[in-house]
Amino acid sequence: MSEYETYPNVCRAVGLTCEECTSSTAREVARVCKGLRGKALGQMFVQLYPQPACSSMYSHFAQAYREASSPEPPRIQPQREKTLYAISAVA
Image 1 (cartoon, helix red, strand yellow):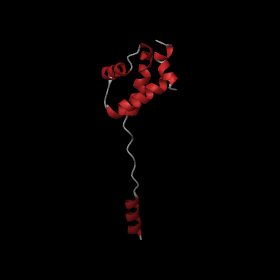
Image 2 (cartoon, one colour; image 1 turned 90 degrees about the vertical axis):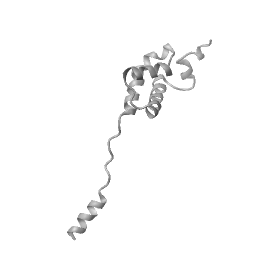
Image 3 (cartoon, one colour; image 1 turned 60 degrees about the horizontal axis):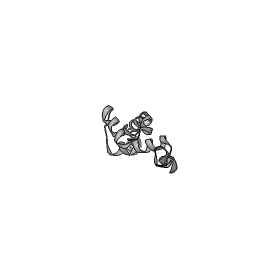
Image 4 (cartoon, helix red, strand yellow; image 1 turned 120 degrees about the horizontal axis):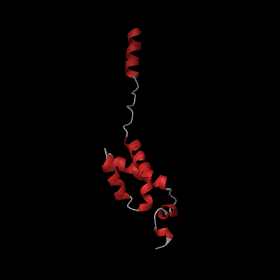
């Protein structure tokens, strides 16, 4: 086996750092698998990254997953109709 057939060399050969690799994977996992926590998140990581060289990236993967999983703040809808009603009431 050549050095390019081992991880993380495979990732580096295609231009990925370990951080980029685990972050992008974590975002995709968060998109399709909502609500993973603790042991389940750890098991998902091990299934995706069984190579011992990748094991040190678990905390990075978990943080990226949590960030991608956090609910977006509610968007504030413009209050145009309410403003128009208030303006017409005054007129």
